[in-house]
Length: 485
Image (cartoon, rainbow, N blue to C red; front, top):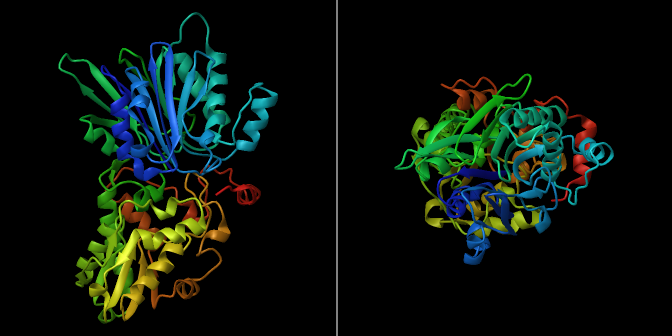
């Protein structure tokens, strides 16, 4: 998962993009980068680590211009610790293009071969973002006629990109001297939202970003989500053009955004993340009541922070006391997106501390947003017991994660997933809990979609059904064999 933002403004954008990336930091802590354009000149800086520690005053002063983009990353394709894999990526023709990407391409092998043999282009990294950039550059070069670049040429190039690449992608690119381009894959798997604001002279600033909280924090009005397959092109003067560039677009957003990844104060595809998590809690409470005697539960506790709304609703609906038993150290990264199993395990006890006064002698129902590898869950159960809990019931607001996620979330290997090939009682034994209860797939989908215009979700990690239709068993085996995390 990554976070991206692009801004076209009447004022310098370096600080604006930096502030936006701070708000998107939860979407990745491996690396970060900013690029700006000043006329025909592109300035960029990228580095490993988090936003607050990555940029110095001298770096920010070098990022001149009123158009720019930014990126925060955790690795799903490419080398996790390699600074060369940090985004944005740059190519010098046509004009000079710099690009950031949130998602994961699933036909990288074919693209690498085509780029070398047909397009005669060379890439230096294993990043699918660099592949995507070169495909866009090739298609844009093929559309240019005359001395300038017009929106139709840009949109025709994006239409050809859609025909060549497969997988999930939300993209923002700068074309030196010409403006900002943003587009979304034909299934709308990864999020992208458009906003605007007017200055005192009536001139319009534009922003595109992964989450709506970026817009609201900076005083932008939410215009709408970028549609699946749609491209938006904004000139340096602030003129906005848009066109549907995919042949058969359909909105099927990633369910894991609502379960875990997005901040609760964001709205994606017209769905409030916070309200979706409350509804997940309501549905989970019903399942809990069906599977165990409620008299065996003294308190309901969340694993902070993303499971808190669901846990509050579980407690309210079951009529059981809600307590905060785990204290979170906010200066440790999210363990789910850490690149190595050993690193994830070490960080759990650094991240969470169990307060014994809330556990001693109690039958505790713990609510987490999801259970992926089980490393965090197992440690949490042990911590609860060590703090004096009598019985530990572990619940997940999401269904069992049984299959790899290939659309931009770091779940590439079936062998790493605790639920793969195991029944729920076997998973319970692995975790060491007294009871284990999962959300049902149908309940998760209904909770997220309730009251929205969205009709379907990308749920491949729960169901094994891949919406792009091109993910084969051979591809999954190749991904597992070549994973770098």
